Amino acid sequence: MSDHSIHRPGRRAWLRGLLAMGVAAGSARSLSAMASEAVDAETGLELGTAEPFSFETLIQRAEQLAAEPYDPPPRPASEAIQSINYDAAGKIHYRRDMALWRDGPSVYPITFRPLGEYFPKPVAMHVVAGDQARPVRYRPDYFDMPSDSPLRAVPEGTSGIAGFWVHRSRRTHDWFEEEPWATFQGASYFRAVSETGQVGMSARGIAVNTAGEQEEEFPDFRAFWFEPAASEGEPVVVHALLDGPSVTGAYRIALRSRGDTEIEVEKHLFVRKTIDQLGIAPLTSMYWYTETPNVHLRGWRPEVHDSDTLAIWNGAGERLARPLVNPPSHGYSAFADQNPRGFGLLQRDRDFSHYLDGVGYEKRPSVWVEPLGDWGEGQVALVELPTNDETFDNIVAFWQPAGSQLAGSALTYRYRLYWSEDEPFDPDLARAVSLRAGPGGDFGKPRIADTVRLVIGWQGARLESVDPEEAEFRVEASPVGEISNVRVRQVAGHPDRWQTEFDLHVTEDAPVELRGELRVDDEPVAESWLYQYHRQAFREVMP
Image (cartoon, rainbow, N blue to C red; front, top):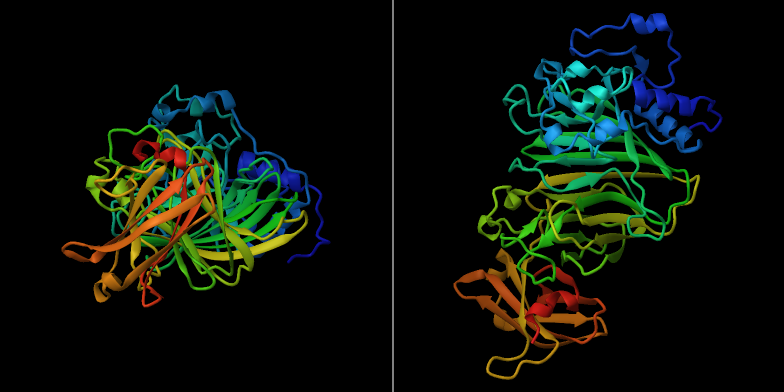
């Protein structure tokens, strides 16, 4: 992918300078050249000397960096920065008149985010014009903040910038007063909005050993390069350099705002140290509880979650839906595949009355991953961690290529992320929209111990054209579970809504894998339903 004979000395020094001072890559600049730099008239920012830049040279830099020992990013004024909690951060505001492209040429202004308790590592920012890039030099006066703000403890010559926001069009919106439509901050995390304008779950540049035996790593986007979008139909192109103990990467990220958000990613990865579990296109979300029983503490709201379903469109063309769970202990599920067509974490329940909360859970975006090109063999992995509150994300989904990724290897992936209300390629199939539970057995008869009745709600126009009397729900359980009393019925007065139910008898605490298919004349009329049942979580409804 690049010339292995390229001269490598000084690459670690280049990275340290890039991160600490925001200078362009590898430049041996004189003091007189530095002194001649001034505030850029077009951007209002203090910019460094222009350097040649292209995505190809960034790929080369990432490859060269992987050949060097890992050098962690600096954490300037770490004690002071750790004191920038939620309240302290709320008093730090980026100045509108200091926004990149506040007057053009890009239609989408960009503002920068300060260091803080959860974002203690500075990130270098660059502005691209043609084949040249200039580094943004940090100045405290970019921010309005109290005279005693901990951010003022950042030493001179060190950056206090941790991330950035991409704002609405300056031509059609009051962009500074409205919420941004894309944000990048913290390790390799980023978020965007759907047409509802609400943020929710996050994507990541990479996931490393999220559920493996090796220690999990969180590589960082160490630097960004911005290309302007001259019109609302053009993307904002962001280039990013990723660095971590086991992997480096060069990213080209094209962001489009169309009410919903589309983000196209091309990434070139270089493995520094063998990785047992590499996660491509990782999605990160929060699931506390729904109407499905669980043993975790519940709050005053009926449901609390950013996402409720993992959906998969596998390489064989089958559509799968796996409701999320809040497990009693760490959970890991893998769905083997070859050349997947897509997967995503979805927020399917859009009914405000199911949340009764002003934070807009019913408006949280779903995020769908569309692979571009063949991804080969691997699996869609789902990690579910137990939680007792909504503070931290506890759900991760990603594509895991087959096998370990060996040190010295290089990988390239392209994919598109859709931030919308639902998956963008909706099939002519009913969807699983709810899961409820109660005691198993028949009414008027003694309840059966260790038996729960699971009721799945289905919805879709496809159901209006078929007869529920001719339908069959085929449900299977892993060996420790026994299935009985399977039924299918239409919800009275709603021809597009059906329910399937069955009893599940389980006497062990081991997780039970369930799979159900709703068919008419042996043809599927709904997506395949998957679920991981935890007996401990359903004890409150057990006979």
